[in-house]
Each structure stands twice: as C-alpha cells, then as structure tokens.
Image (tube, rainbow, N blue to C red; front, side, top):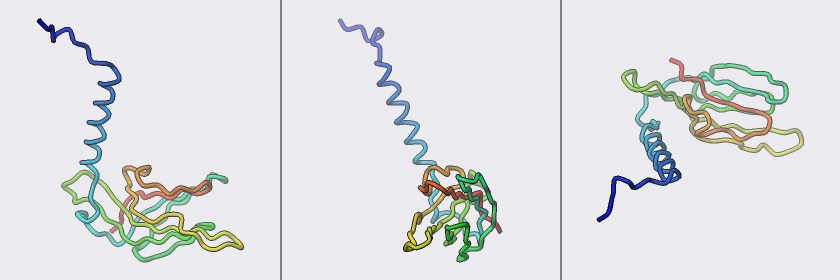
Length: 135
C-alpha cells in the first residue's frame, strides 16, 4: 500500500512551479498597445549616468528631442482606458550620434511606464524611460 500523504515535493520543484505560475500571470497581465487609447504626447525621463544629471520632459507624437548625443523620437503614446489598471506605453526610436561616427539606432520599440526593465534601452551612458502619456 502506498502512503501518498507522506510524499514530500522537492523544494526546487515547488519553487520552480511557483515561478512558472508567476511568470504566466505576468504575461497575461501585460497590456497590448493596439487595445490602448491613443494620446498626443508623452512624459519621459532621461538620465546621464556619468554626471547623474536627469531631465523630465514632454514630447508630442512625431517630435524629436536632442538630449546630449541622443536623438529621441516619439512615434506613439498609448494608455489603458480609465476602467483598466493604469498603464502607459510609448513607442520610441533613439539614435546616438557620436562625434566622427555614423549615427547608430540604439533603441526602437515600446517602453512601458509600469515596467521600464521589460523593454529597456541598453546604453552604458544614458537611460530613457516613460513616465506616462499626456493629453
């Protein structure tokens, strides 16, 4: 006769199952930009990691702003409807222009205000992230 009541799950198995369930819940909760409301502008923040200088600014869709050697272009800003969980997403194109070199696109994609690390710009000197959409 087998005694199922004394079976013990390995700790690693339980932790792995919990992590899998948590990641599945996160994936389902992520907003879909096409189902969000269009907004005409976005509020962004920029950081120079060398000087620790930050700047918060608002951009209109279609506008390009120069921040040091970066050129940031806002292509779209969308947010969840008021009855949904608050979330803003902006589609950004970021180009870095170094003296004597060709301009290089360092980021192109959606950034989410509630999860900056989900789709972050990888740059050793600068950070750019979305704070929200503006009316």
